[in-house]
Image 1 (spheres, one colour):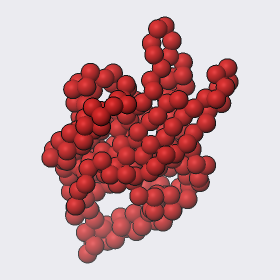
Image 2: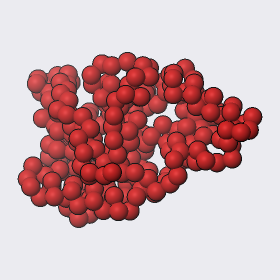
Image 3: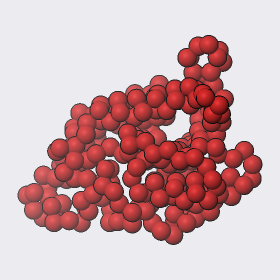
Image 4: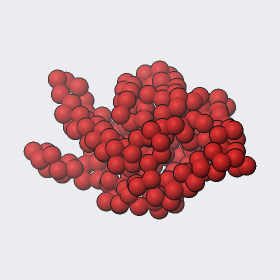
Length: 228
């Protein structure tokens, strides 16, 4: 059995925007609280024996600190980073290009509205499509699970994994396990994966000679840090 805790990063230290591939810093104070609480969980027993992280700083910084403080192996997986929002990625909504009183601003807000209403069909300019994002995350997740079960050469199979990731990544993983339609805008609009929340998944392989995995979602979106 492998238990995986999917923890979304804390709020970022930036103006409201679509932060996908933009490597924005996390809130320093909230990151400290997240690290403190994760470390407290670690010391209460059933400790994590592997930490996995997205390469982006809002996940990687706290993952690295946690791994160092708790002497836990750390693995960075590039393919687990958030979706790339293209030309709109990291651009604050109060930027001149989003000014409501201009033709360009009206055009950009119309693009955003179409994207929010139908993210599977209304890809933003120069952005990663939702289909490509889904394929990337599902593939990365499958490879991660297989790598855990193929541990050999005297290396123990990890039993509890802490995975620092992004809201979009966690939604796609949950959709895959629960067999939800990743194209449905409700998944992205209504499934709340708050900052500094944890969702937990258990993976078992009942028949050791088979590669058939059984997944169970234990809970979704429980707060690790209580923030206003």
